[in-house]
Image 1 (tube, helix red, strand yellow):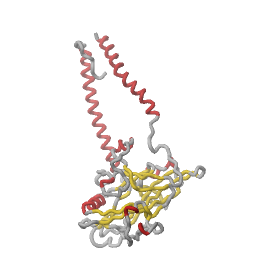
Image 2 (cartoon, rainbow, N blue to C red):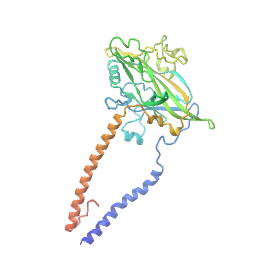
Image 3 (cartoon, rainbow, N blue to C red):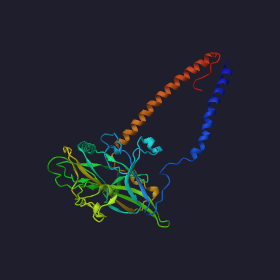
Image 4 (cartoon, rainbow, N blue to C red):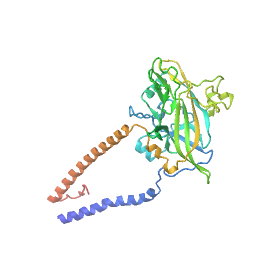
Length: 369
């Protein structure tokens, strides 16, 4: 009886494995054709368009991410209802990558491009201020490279080492007694009044993007090897009446209809410009003009080593270790539960086989096999 039951068990095992083998064979062509975005390099010619994307807003203080457009940033020409299919990285990270209205042309430098003009009410200004106080950072992507702020460290021998801080802060808090209140990472905020009065919150409404590329002189193609940013806070002003709808992604000063007093194609934003201070007590409208620069610089970095600088990022690693430890504990706990269930199931099946209990008529053999 035991031998016949063992033979029946082996037959049931073969029947259960057959569908698995068929599915595995069918999935082989898909596995061969699977492609991870960003693995193969992309070559660009002069003037080619680059698409800048954005991930979530993150903070090392709260560890609670928000979608980028949860704050009223510029989104002219962006259809947020039109989502592309999630790739493998987005699924694993649990974040969605969205388009941005920023325009990049390979090798074309642009100064003081007007993104949009917004009038924010008190509630929206308070939302910006809260995010700035909680040190939230925005994370852009260009050619699958994350945006970063360049930080330079000098060792005891006088050698300078370049490191990255991934993302950039959306604003900065200027404390009254801070001796370095005028500085803001890679960029700078004009420090007038920074050491007097109460704490001030400035909004970074101007971004200076630096795109590093490695050029193949033989083929005339370029590969993106770095994506850096320098944020500024500028209280833009203008003298003439501006048609803001027709000035989206136009360079200031190209024509009289899109001219700003604070910057132009020949006059980039200066670190001494008056900052844009947020007044959370203002019940009226607050005008914010969003602008940006694009600068291209050749780099000796090869495409195959473009991630090396990111590996030496200057970010605080405590959050990453916390996430890793948290994930490890969850996996360990769930694995223990599954192991207990499997052990109990196997024990009951083996006990039943040792007793030699016959199956009733019409009853199929089930269990771990």
